[in-house]
Image (cartoon, rainbow, N blue to C red; front, side):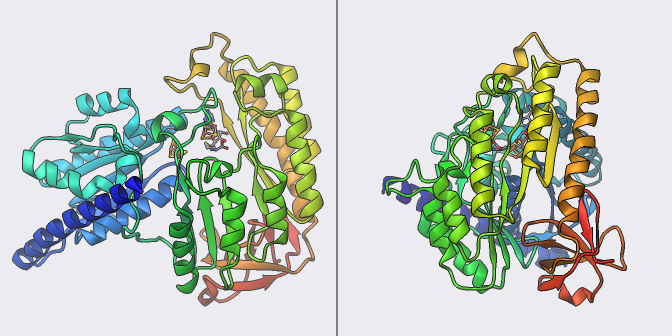
Length: 470
Ligand code: SAH
Ligand code: SF4
Ligand code: F3S
């Protein structure tokens, strides 16, 4: 109850700040005939995409137009990721380029948020080496953007938003979505799992579930607006509800959302294998709207490595979950994440990963070279795997998965599939692209006006990554 009042106060405070800034921006428009604009750049996962849609909604509420060109922006926001070193380097290099924009327009405001902005050493680096960055704020503070702009104006000093003590996330703030038919809905924030390689629990804080009523009314509203594909987001959706006063788990939430009438699909990510249970799979199998797609990050096929990763499941448990999934939902599309070269990974450990890949027959894998993250236990281990060994294993993994993915996709050739059309293909303007109910990419011919609609396509050809109508 106390928390609900706190959330409402937060929402009111943020909307008030938006109003003050909107009035300022309206005056600016009246004086200059030009509307101020905001440029947003997003790195990282779907959670960040969802956060950026909220930031864009706040920008609009503050009276900014959204621009695709940083050179004409009055406000630049970089929503960063810290999952691997490469992601951070990329973000820092692009943020470095914004110095030039600031030189062109000294009134430009630059904000850095996202997971990198929650790491103490990166905040120091931004403070010292990027003096043109005006505001730095963590993902748990992303809704505070309007308040931070006002603070910057009032104090004239750069704002490094401190770690929030109250991590509850306010409801009812405006969201500006990229798509008019696919939507992200965060159902929870943070992670409690502390996998030994992972930075996320340190930068996103502990798990906080949204109230089921808030999620249900957001999904209902989306369906009413014609959204066809809704992905529920959380670092470990299976933990949903553990922190709520009412007894509800993720399977209950999914069953409740599934009762919303309409022509749409529900998806979710990510499910942690340690607690992806039969109840969830039973709800999926019995549902009207839940897509037959399951992303179940494995990370490694070696029990020793899984133990050292602090994943809290073993090969046997993982395979049992997959077997139950396949039994209940025979046409399920299965995908996973694999980390190659975790400290101490031997050739035998890696062979265990290859063998489980063959055993499961994933439709798709997302594989990553292990990247040491400052502050995590695995990063300080002495037995880091040499770069060349990681790279060679990575190549073997991809070669095997290409064979498996191709064989799986070929099984769909000649079958009628329901596809949500994403419009003209980026790679080939003569074709449309879309996603099957199982989430596979498919290319086909048709009119671009089909964008956002369901169509039936029969693929005649497949490769390891996609299906093709001709
Ligand atoms: N919460 C999700 C994962 C989020 S991060 C889950 O538990 O499945 C997405 C993926 O990035 C992880 O599944 C993992 O495969 C990869 N990853 C995380 N930390 C990494 C690191 N330090 N180096 C390489 N890959 C990493
Ligand atoms: Fe990272 Fe593990 Fe949490 Fe996923 S479950 S975000 S891999 S700590
Ligand atoms: Fe990156 Fe943060 Fe997502 S580290 S992967 S943006 S949770």
